[in-house]
Image (cartoon, rainbow, N blue to C red; front, side, top):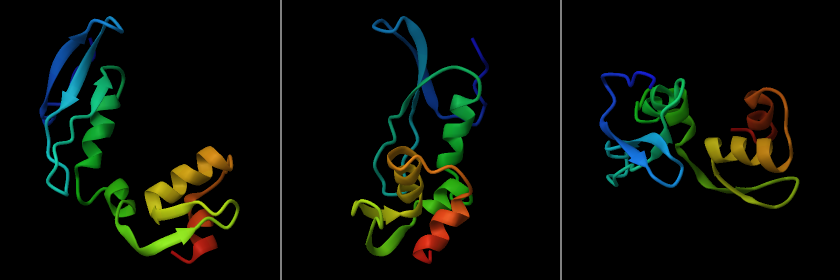
Length: 108
């Protein structure tokens, strides 16, 4: 079983359905609600997830809400923060390229 970073606040448990060991995050989100994310223990999953809770990480900077929802110029979907904007473009419109191209399209 891969090592879990010492800074990780969570518990390891065995998921009978998938028959794998998993890790559940016990940190609190910025809005005060418990995270509760359940991750497969492999590679750098836990370490990558931990970055989400760091207020200085690039992911946290993208989570800041925009002043108002911006409609997607391609399908009209509502985009409320930069992270959601990136996910939307990568998944729905199969965007390949830098995130700056997406952000500059909307002036954010």
